[in-house]
Length: 575
Image (spheres, rainbow, N blue to C red):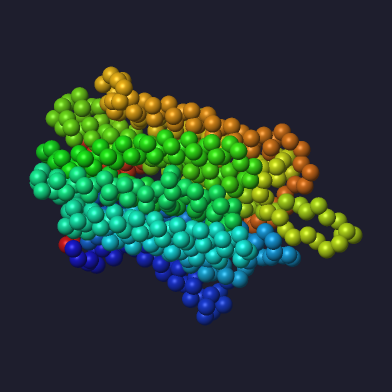
């Protein structure tokens, strides 16, 4: 596989992000540049201009180690939009530390932070378009390494450095685990190309089947563990509360959103290895069936445990950032539901490829409900979560209990507990309304975007093997139980989200907040508010691209796209 000029043209958005990062880093070092986050926003805008629109349904452009299709285009735009919002949040998060006396403005080093953040975005976008294990791993490392640097740069106090070190050492373990999974897949397929590995897995070679029985559970399990760390899913979730509490609101926003996107992409690529490409007839081999069966069982179990553990942990939290960290764990469980559904639907199609009932049974779950539900949910989650942390960054610090005649001014205290938001609706009504809307969306209250995400996930789970009876131990029973667990967890989550809203609207305040976090964070909060309202009013604008992206990732077409499939399919090879 070779890389051509066509490949670099397709990589133009990522190249723009790297160029902007170099401008920020070198400008700070040699020209005294201090407007790092402005450079970051310009770079993200340039990348958006170069990215163009989403590819048409059925269109796939393959060049060297990258693929541009509905799935990669959706991920690329999710990364760029989220990156623009998070750049505003980071730019407004001006305070170096909660214990710094005086102004404590962290204006020095903003270019270093902005340049590092742009490299992180470029790495995440590369993960979305990679069709090769080497490029996929490089992209994941371009996410991990800048994250360590961001965590270390933003906080200079002991708790901030502790958070940075915890994430650093645990991320090393996660990277090593994923690399071991990649080695196993390479051993099975004899190539680093995901397409070649998929061809090998789907073949009926008896030698491969014997090896797959041993290696595939190890490979899938290790890949799942590596993705679980980035998603903060069980059993790799335990770092999240400590790291979120010790870092800044801007960094917490990054950790709770962008790595989850990377984890979803990794699992989507692992799932796609065992699904027959569109337009290719024939049954898949036993190795691919083992792959799908193990994947959906593991994803379903982890989804149920993760959402339950995250929500139960959040119920007992009073620290606001730890509560949001536990909430982030729970949302990782919701995202895994869609992965499990897509894998189970693919397994059903593999077992009964020529059965018309099976085709009807799997069209919704694999094309619309499985992967598409996860992609829809990740978009709604990213917007609402970024909005929450943007609001917290904008609100900044609580007013200290101090008067000019009682001694020196005490250190600034950031908003830490739920009680710090008491009475916010009377002092900052716009911020309180925005926070309430974001939290209600995360809770899944209709008709907000989070409701549509949870509804699609639950519906997709109920559609698995929907023509079969619910018998003990059957696949349908698994997913009916998973849908019930999802609904129960949504009810549990509503309790702690409503507790925060009650503090803002039904309690009186003693201190109040200073709203000194910076204009950029306030703008980021308003951007998220507008996006949430737009999706609430016109959810179809997000449903349609998510549906097509999920279909592309699952190697199927939706019913609306089938007539044009032959005309729209386009493959460009440069290898």
